[in-house]
Picture 1 (cartoon, rainbow, N blue to C red):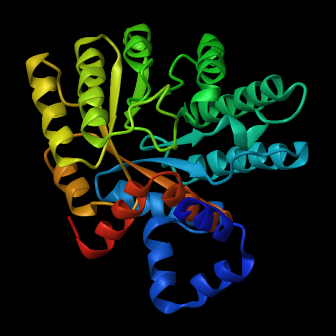
Picture 2: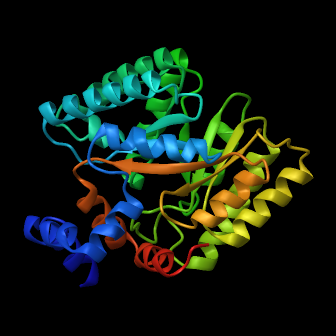
Length: 309
């Protein structure tokens, strides 16, 4: 019931306008989303990078079923990368791309179209002096997404992959991807998945995350530890020490607006700390859908509003 209500709210333009026009809630939006334009994303990125952090920028949008919209999203990334290059920020800024936003869900040749759009974005990123991480979505797209990453890495070897620890399959995927030069973001998982394919209990998900993290830290690749959980951050640091990993051979990642003081603490200790920075006019859908997918996401956003750490 709760999830249906939130998903219904995500499609309400009236609620969106009411939210952004309310001073308090408008501030909430600005805390978690850079803004609606590429210039907004560049401006916030500049501030974060000058503060010692790194960024990965997500142009909001997913489940695109219109070719024109998929092309517009591709063009938005190309423009963003050009602006980042002109601002001389690409040493600290990369982009994150959802294949569903650039055509994966289109009927017929959707996967082929998304791959070509992703290739064009990767080319623009390489020209700008940075790279791309391909976001992971629900479990039905995992094989297709990993296949796309493998294909992109033929020409763009620094292309990042994302794995979700709560899926039963992910330990095996970690073993496959923990090789030299392989950038892998490990997150718990944001989508509501059936019990047949994923752990659904919080402690089970945490244990699965640690098992996956052990594989990545012991491997030859570049782990990206995407978590706000203090225990998992501590465990990641301990595993880095155990495997004689120098700072800079892995990184931490957190959402923009969540635990900013912890982000700054890690960066001040010489750790690579990358902020996942969303922007675009679909910010409302992003916030509401993230909360609808898992109740824990709602708690995460609420805690971040009442704590500066």
